Image (cartoon, rainbow, N blue to C red; front, side):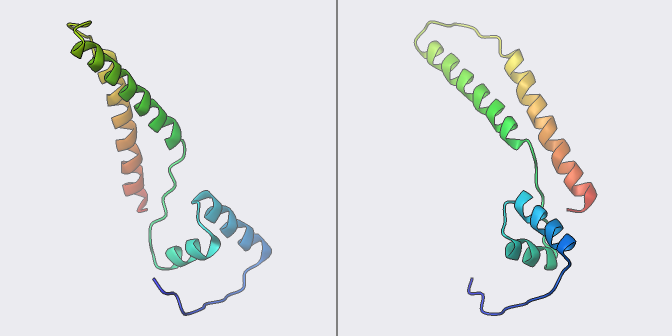
Length: 106
């Protein structure tokens, strides 16, 4: 998108620091953050998502290993109840995050 217009405004040092922190937290520069904020766009930052994706990756790796053993005929039956439990916990966490976002109007 070609941005050809400029808007400038003054803020106090304290306001600038607050805006700067929010922009950094959302991994945006100040211009992007203020523009989206002023246009009424939702800016949602979900912290600790890295740990969640790491857990999902570990579950996927374990499932791949079990699948390989099954194809090789080294495993006939597998108890996946612990895997199911972990996936359900992750699913519930993701659902709770999206529900919180909906409730706060973000």
